Image 1 (tube, rainbow, N blue to C red):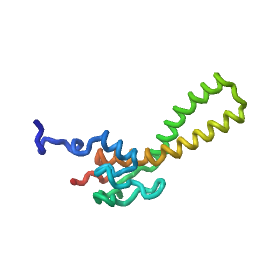
Image 2: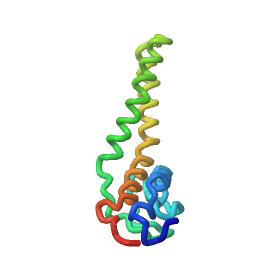
Image 3: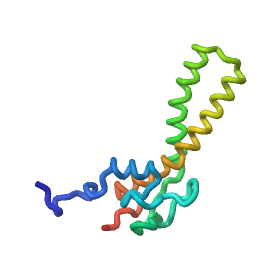
Image 4: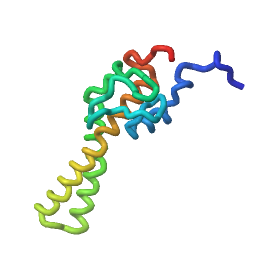
Length: 131
């Protein structure tokens, strides 16, 4: 049986729940308020629960993660398409260029939300204030 005083700081901010909420671009605390107010701009606070986001330091992390994920998906797909179908080079380039751009545009704000949620969950960069 767990008591409130036995909880570690991470127990009240579960990582998996926070990452899922961040990936959905929602507030990692309440899961209802929007985390971003434009494509990549993080709000200063949650309009629902008033959680302060000014401590976030996502910087280049989401861009690096996006490149990592997109390249690990598209490179094997490119090799498979080339070896199985042998399309014209311009056709292959066109399809995979559009695919890479579309996947990158889809993942970038979601990964930014996940990085901010990770920082919030682990109380990094000033998110360590007691709720």
